[in-house]
Length: 118
Length: 499
Image 1 (tube, chains in turn green, brown):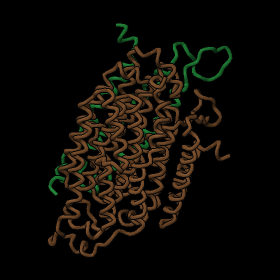
Image 2 (image 1 turned 90 degrees about the horizontal axis):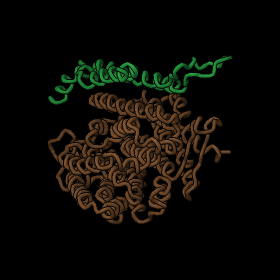
Image 3 (image 1 turned 135 degrees about the horizontal axis):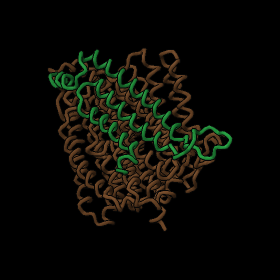
Image 4 (image 1 turned 180 degrees about the vertical axis):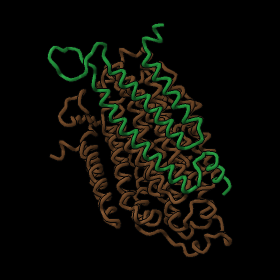
């Protein structure tokens, strides 16, 4: 029981990670792939944030009488990673719009067929 | 003043130049500024290499925060060599870019194109310079995001799908990498690579460290297109604008190989890798990659795609050196990193010159062009010989060291594969030569009217191409810079073997 409840944050991360990763691999719709990629990245954000938590630790703001703080560094790292994730999503969606203009579809199979028939 | 901030300036200069270039009016100005910046960075990188070539290490603290808390740029011979390759190729690609970009990219996008190019350069140089593993991720994403944008500027609509495919695979690779970094941080509490290397040995048995290692390796294997994770590469190189193909083929996979070296030898230490199946797996994948990708290259009908498959095979040679893990083999990897950048740079520039004249990269449209464009043709022949590894060219030196390393460890199968790979290279280089020189000009082709008028490529394309061709021959005879620096770097990368 302890291995499940004691590490519930990791289990959550793994479930979200696999859901996102599976979506990226299995979906043929280009927008859905980006959604999957986002879910995949969010799981990593959660992983970082949860390892930054120190048991019984307070919010990392200096205050009188508090000696144990959570580690703020992973949160800061993840702020950077979120920015990178937003940029990736924006660029990916911009590419999808251009693909839609060029091919008239955003289904991977249709795009593949159009390129083959040339 | 400049000298003390040298290692930071190399990264900051192109980073600051990018937004400035983006707001400049379209025309020649963005090109001129980015060329100037890339040459300044090249000069600084050469200066940096001179400072560390005797074996000392530059440690630069960003913002004055002492490592391991602050970000540290830690420059030794390996970093400096990679930074020199990246900035040198950029400095040669940009003069080439002027004419090629005018022909391939709409005028209104020129300023943005050069801005993205500068960002890509920033990212690649940052990866080479930094000594902080999370900072490395940030630079990795800067270079990746800008290269997705650059690839999507290709003329054909397939460029868009190629860029999209690369975006998905590249992001998965980068995300795997940060998962690994996160696990390392959870175990050690540090992100500084030098600090990690000291804290990791006592945790070698821990399963989390093994997981972290696996994530980082798979992540970067995607980035450097190690067979069988190379699927994004052929399309990306084929459909990207010529200048982008030249720059990425000569630098981006090389930088990823450097990261692999750094992670395997500095962060984890080879004694850790030896106890995992990773080194044998590398050897297996490299052997398969070299043979299969060289075969694939033979059957390609598009010149850029042919060279792209050859690039995947060549990445196999570099990773072989890491898998063997001896002083000689890592020297071979670093030397091949340098030499292959020269080879592929020269070859893609020559192919680019043909595309500039004919407007297509398909082999059948190149027939008979060799006689009309003798200088470009000669460049392809010399570059091709170097790719094969004929004595007297740079390619020979790196393959020689790799074969020596394989013989030293009695891996006879690998020796055979390296030689077989060279024989296969003879075939696909010959394919190019045959089409260019021995085929008659095809009268019925829609490209005929252009072909009969085709003459030698303009000087702006020929000069950078020939600088690289001459470098290919020069570094085939004078190995002081390449092998000398690589040996210095290996002393620091593999201290245990050295003693």
